[in-house]
Length: 131
Length: 283
Image 1: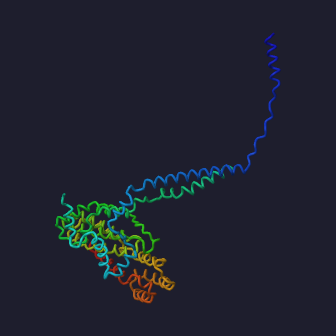
Image 2: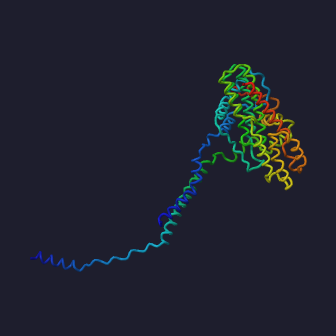
Image 3: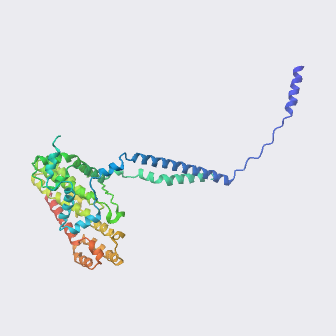
């Protein structure tokens, strides 16, 4: 008897509850879509730029020479002027013949490397002398 | 539709940034397949090239052998480079006449060394090696002119003229059918003129239009008339007097740096004659 009374009480208790009416779903607007796409795009660009910046910084650090500027100036034993089209044309203009121009071009560069009173064969022989 | 639009936008952005990188990787010809890069490696491997500026005592001199021993790597690298079909020296024409062409000086040295090497091998009975070095030397000489101005073409001409006489020596000493065929093939590849003289003239005179040459309006007008005639002179020497007359009457600014057409035509014809002679020997 006691158990039936409990059941009835519980049933009464449960009857107080009613299902809630569902709320309206939030409206997804066009503007919200655009904002989301823009945010996504901005995020992608930001990620790309960060990656590019990191990569550039890493490359710059890697290419940084351990040689100091003082050492660098010491390494520059002589001024080197690379041949340009202008310099080459001036040489062609000045030289009596094409062959002479080409010879001057080749010999000119070598005369700086070898003293005039010393033959290249002597230079080569000296290289073979062991200390 | 609403979802596709932002995706397309992102894809477009990604394509914009990644495009250049992808186009580089998808290039049909790898950058390493450029003969000019191999030639630069060969230049770096050259040793004691100063010796080339001195009289060689004789091909039997031990120091000559030593020179070739030291430069074997450079000569081999050059030979391998000649196997590649493309040679692009990457001349920076945006710099106008200040564009560096140091490679020409190095090429003259390496080419001269190779010509001497052909002589050395031939004198020591190594006909196979001599033919191989000669074929490579002819190809290399031709490559030196690639996309260059008149100066590079004249240097290439000089190198070809250093190599061509050796065909006679080798043929007289006796060559196998395969060696003869290799020489015939390389001469055929050079074409009847040997070098692209017309292209070189166009590039040379095209430089003068740049601001660094400071040509006046009259100078530029004269240049526009001289250029097609100069190009024609490379295939028809009969226009030479008219061209010379035009140059003589051009404004001083232009006249001062205009290459002597007589010298250029003479070099071109001399090379053609030597090529024809060499082809005749191999018939």
